[in-house]
Length: 434
Image 1 (cartoon, rainbow, N blue to C red):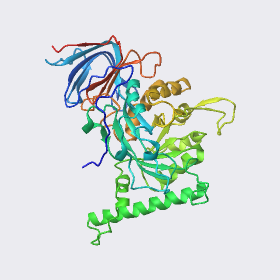
Image 2: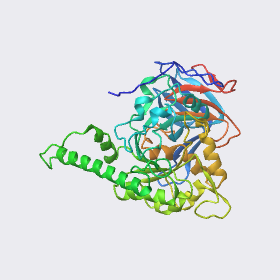
Image 3: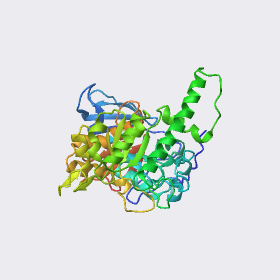
């Protein structure tokens, strides 16, 4: 049973939106679309994405029931029609790194350098304003996490942006293990962790102890030993990490930081890992990241660098383009949005982060993947979100143009098959059931 504290104040409102989802109700929709950008591969091994012109998506029970060209999909009786014949229909945006949903004190305990007992799911707060605004930008899934003041801040949580259905808000209670190296956790009080050598030693010891605990239980459960290990609750959640059920996301910077993340988590412990932020020349390790299928790169909120520590050539460098040119396929984009300050990119501007990345050299398709399917794949939730495919969650964005075109607003958003956002005065027509 989940031990989750949810502070929900009914149906949330966004100043520019008419929100129509109601708790406890199920919905059946037929979306008639001008263009469906599924973000799913056209065929196995294909490099192009599946695009359906003049298509229909059927939504029921919170899932995508069917999709395809109008000539191939019949609209059943009783389905409400969303007439989007002049619009693009795309998957909901996946935010792969942010800190919204609780206040700063709840998201970063600063007493111990490692905190494996803590989890962000205990302090989810759905009345947080940046969280409720996210949906107006098409963000339907949020990966929110402890801060970066300690080397291991606990566990993240993955949540949906429609709180009208509290039982289904949390997509995964344990999103990832959060680790941190470089800059933020470098303590100046003289204790362990004041230097990067100290942080590296501390994280290696932490991982070695967690791995030893996990392996001891695996040996006992498989019958390789009759001696039952001592149960230690502080290490239990880490078994999810070593079972590879969830990834580790590591706050890091510079070529040194990205390479150290690759070494410690992937090479030494064989764990799927997401190196996040990676600014100030982190793409200097891009070729090494590209060689390892279990290493993902997550850029943001800084997506452009001037006179970076790699080239120092007095030029602007798009971080996404630098990683992609080095062969990195597992690339996603974040805002690092936080609740307690507006110094980071606002949560609803995640699509703009991809737009800027495309402006500075990242291929448009890669930019779109970075806020949809690649983000979902890195978090191991791509079986549910990140693309429009039969059986996946009906998280859908309707817009006049592509997600990364900043000249048009989001018109409508469905989360778990409910219309959770509709722009005020939109000309999108919702017809009565047949």
